[in-house]
Length: 140
Length: 81
Image 1 (cartoon, chains in turn blue, orange):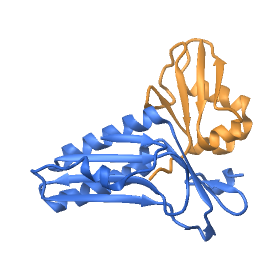
Image 2 (cartoon, chains in turn red, yellow):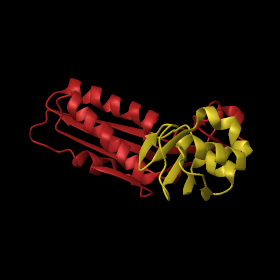
Image 3 (cartoon, helix red, strand yellow):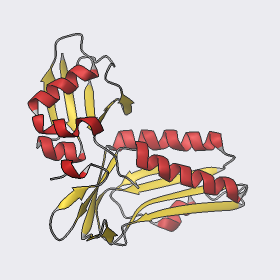
């Protein structure tokens, strides 16, 4: 299951997508909006996505993980739109027969999301905002 | 040929629009479209070394040939997760 949506993420429902009697381990990762970023207090955060490409890239990351490790099921949900501190931005759930593979695959998926999935985060502070990962000199 | 160019995130803010159409002489590749976009929006130039491009939901390199009416997406550094 891969979902990119402005709807709030229900962490347990993502976890439930990977239920499988063959699994002895389920690792979930939740990415949450943090209050402090580079020493600045975050007021809110905006996620923008190229949705069709983001879904396609996520699918290929998930397919690669399924080939790389012995896994049973993977679910990924990423939120878009305006989020506040404490909101859940992304949840990854990986179910595998054993924990080692589940941990490794979960780490791999979040790392690849941060490299190759066209989703962008803009943080807003008391004054102004900034696109994350874009060099400072390019942010106005 | 006509190419639709779609901007995201900071490139959308700098361009001040999310989509434009450009006309290119055939044959043209992604790099030709990028040159035309940077000429139209010189402010994007400072971001040039950090931009990637995508066609049909996948990254495209600068030498990839373009077809009439294709959509080229400008992909600034990503920051999901």
